[in-house]
Image 1: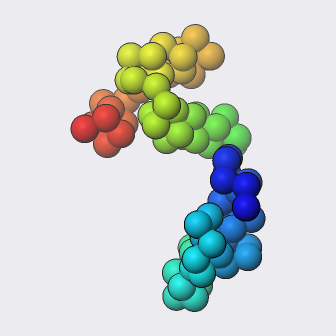
Image 2: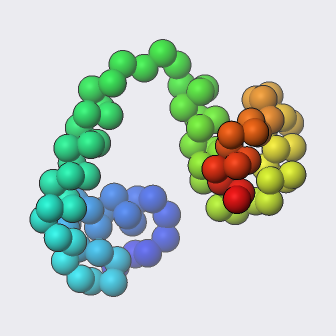
Length: 90
């Protein structure tokens, strides 16, 4: 099974099988589906805020805080907020 990228995770969830080949417990799949269905029903006000949130959440796994902060600013978004730094970098 392909193990890179979010599409690999989405495919594994759809199959109910983790990337290592083990079954994902049905209660976990049910809760995940319930939460994702609720999220899909939530009204959206814009895409740029969601894009920034994703950049912060995922970017914090790949970049140190100074680099990510500068990348956000260079791209036209506001830099990291104090609460984001505390959450993702501590």
